Length: 195
Image (cartoon, one colour):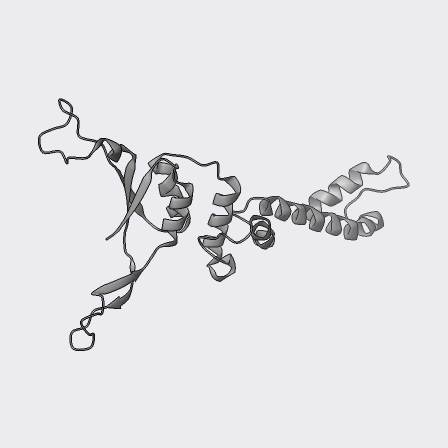
């Protein structure tokens, strides 16, 4: 369809007169047909490049975004990740402005496809806190807990196989830990909980 539109534009650009017939199927139309095809191909390619300008849609230019951004020290080489994750990480790093809200940090984890919840500490205050509230010191207001669901078990204690010094289990730490620690406000302390 785009080729027909290009052909119509080329025909419209011709000077008026009987020497240049505009009837469908004329020799002039057949002469302009290859140019219309090429212009249609160039238009389609330009649309592809516009789409590539967004890291979330990039295929051909994704490697260029990753080259410019460099390897993320928390993730390592992105080439080993699935393309959807690479796109999300490139977009997140390309457009990141920072933030201090739980929603910002949840978004960082979501870019990796990891679900987290954030619990912010609130110090106990007489007259404000309820009797059954947790006793948290004044400096606890700058502490928060990130709960990461579904950790990957690396080892699990096996009776009869493991010896006394073997830990009961170990799991792979999520790359979200590094990303959140790096982006966390300097005056806060982040704790991670795996469930």
